[in-house]
Image 1 (tube, rainbow over the protein chains, first blue to last red):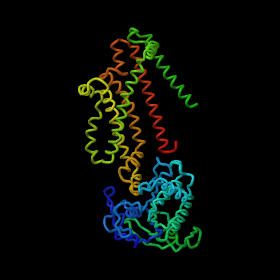
Image 2: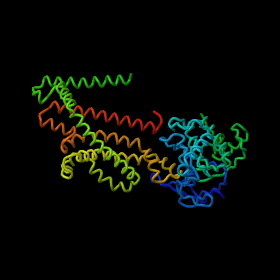
Image 3: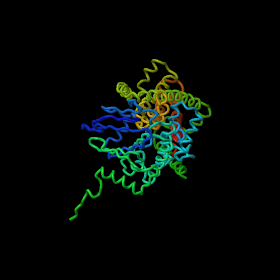
Image 4: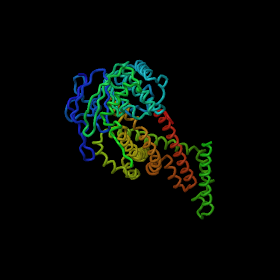
Length: 256
Length: 253
């Protein structure tokens, strides 16, 4: 198995109270899969992502990528954050070149690669701008281009579109879906938005809080072209709603 | 238009100051040699410009100031960048800094004169001390306040030391460091005069002492005015440089 999480546990002490972010979590992911970790806040989805990305260590159990234990972040597995993490003192082009500098890519080639990926995310002509001059959606596109530029094996995305407005979010969802097919990357995507998960994922890992655990893993049997208004799409979405006990008929309000 | 209005405020403000001075001169019973009028101070200023003494002293003072201030800022920023990344070491350094910081740089003056004698060194050392603590402490604080996401991104993209410091930590901390550098400029300028009054035989501070010794209150006040004006100009220059750097730093505004 490409990515293998076995019996992972993670505890925090917060305000003197112990808090179980991951309670014996096991998960296998194949190369090239688009996985969404879906759940409410506190379900451990970001903790699981951080453990996979190497930013945090689990207390027990193992997290392996390609057979090797994850101990630190690697340039082969890039994380895209909700607040973009662009360096505001660098222009767009220099931001995208950041990882290429560590890989000791020569200057001309860096620029060529950076421009190619800026083009891929639809930001040609923005090279000289600074992050502050861009909208949130454009900044996240730059961050995605920066990640893709180092040609990673895996892209981790931690609620990457959470700070964007609904229309921009949908546009970026379509783009990331297109990019994931074109670039053939393994993507692990954290979200609390059910529709987003159904739109993007090959498999949805549904997680629950307190303690953080996997409730079930749902395979999304939709093709490469996904339509949010399609019956099949709505069917899968309803299935997930049911898993969260959020179907409206569960709640009956009385007004006397 | 906005600039013109600001200029109007400056002119009015200074005019009021001069009028108060003139009134005090008119009503006071002091000898004019001890408490001169604005006109007499202006004449003294013209005299100093004509005999070249003023510019000689200004260039002496500015050289000392540049030497003390620039070495101090450089040393404090470098040390601050290191200590900011080593909070455990800083725990042990900080108490000593807090002990030294509130000591007025002039208190060191006799000691410095004993060690180095009269000349350029005492003034430069005083300026160094005056600028050092605010810049060091603001740099350490700035490094500690860096948004952790920059460090996370750096780790992810394989940026390690020393590239991490000059590619990420210094630019990320720069706006706050610039605050400290700016603050230190005013302090350093204040202590330049003090340093030259005690430890030097030339420069603007010495010129004040020299004027007192010759009972030339007009030269004394003219020199004080010059010190004030240079202080404003230095502040303006630094603001301008800061703006240029911050503009290339952040793009907008």
